[in-house]
Amino acid sequence: MRTLIFDTDIGVDDAFALAYAARTQHLLGITTVFGNVAVGQAVKNARLFCGKMAINAEVYRGCSRPLALPPSAPARLHGEDGLGDAFDNTCSDQAPGAVQFIIDSVRAQPHQITLVAIGPLTNIATAINQAPDIIPLVKELVIMGGAFGTDGHSGNVTPFSEFNIWKDPHAADQVLASALNVVVIPLDVTHKVLISGDEVQRLNQPVLSAICRPYLAYSLEKEGFEGMALHDTLAVAWLTLPQAFTLTESPLRVITEGIACGQTVRKLSALASRQDPFNGLTAQRIALGVDADAVRAHFFQTLTAP
Image (cartoon, rainbow, N blue to C red; front, top):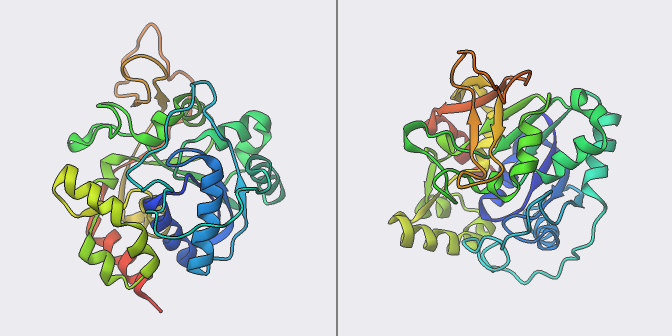
């Protein structure tokens, strides 16, 4: 069991991941960021979901816009409020600052805190920019984000770019090029772990069933499958079942402009080049294979337990 700071732009699949994390890890706090919804809505959503699911964790308010790009519209496939418009949400959108909470927590518990980031990486980038001393003190940073083209799994916003990275590519580039101890869980593996609408019902989790209805309807309309990929849950699954993942290691960068803005790129060759954008960078771990059956089985076992 790890001590986690759970960084999220909480939408439907984020909520599934949070429910799984609450049953398998120790949640030190939930830090929110813009992405699927505006950051104020993310604070409200985190509080509502924790209340509905009896999750005991403090919620913090993080960054409201990208580091350098103009803000873009929230995603709509999660419903207008990010949680399927399933509940009347009267929670406050005010909360203590997420970035300072990350900095203070890591300094107070060096080498003990794992960061799980399943939204844009703006809070993480801001924290290491403000306090670079925390970089070697973070136990591990697990990111759900990116796409590397394995088995045809490329971007889900553009042909190149995955949503979380695309939302703030400058933040992602800073984080992935840093000396943080990073594990990247990209679309290459998350698209392989699917759950059907019927299986959601069999979890016997009424809150999860309620919030995912628009998400499932969108999937049925666009892809002909009434179900969802357990995208964000796989960042937590890495902590519970690391043996289910096949990793490679490479320095990483993110393209921050042009038609491929938001694309995650890794060094594919050791051949010398005149200009090497990966020169001197830490090799990060990237999950490019997964035992989908093992991950699904553990997820169902965990969420259906009393």
